[in-house]
Length: 230
Image 1 (tube, rainbow, N blue to C red):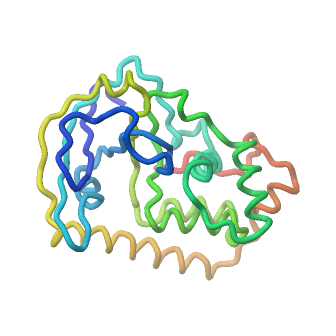
Image 2: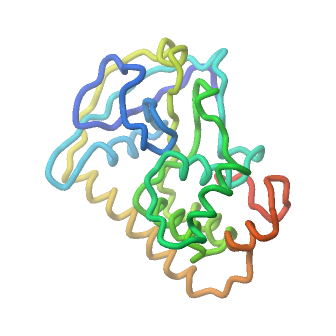
């Protein structure tokens, strides 16, 4: 990563000064300012079927920032999902899912609040469905890893600390038109879901969450996929 990077934040409003401590605790990685290096993705995330949005543009100086990159080979896909289940609200449908949530947090969880900046997948509707299917023992960890690559739904960069917020500078905004970017957003999601359903038709003898719990499998097990981004 270059020391100075350009970030985009899709929103229904112009945000010249991102505020530390605002937002939702139930976002993917908890409280933070959620951005992306992709202008197109930010515009897709900014719009709805009913309204245009704003693509806010910033420069961030990452020098001296303590960065957690969940998409690097240092971490497994279960590190990402453990962080997700700790913060997001999941439909816990079975006793297995309740045990899965606790096991993932205890054995694969990461204290994201110890970092200035987090890099990881954004749990759009499709990604969230994949993760929910996994903790409910419906798909294997290998299928989950494959699903995370489908549709290229996006990587986000999240400012977590006061220090990180002090390093970001507003550069302007563009309007994101719903007529163009809502269509792109829905198409991206549709393509990912289509590929996901095709994948489910394939046989899978891999590790399911119940196998992981019963086997006491931890983060150093070579069967757990690493480096979930290309």
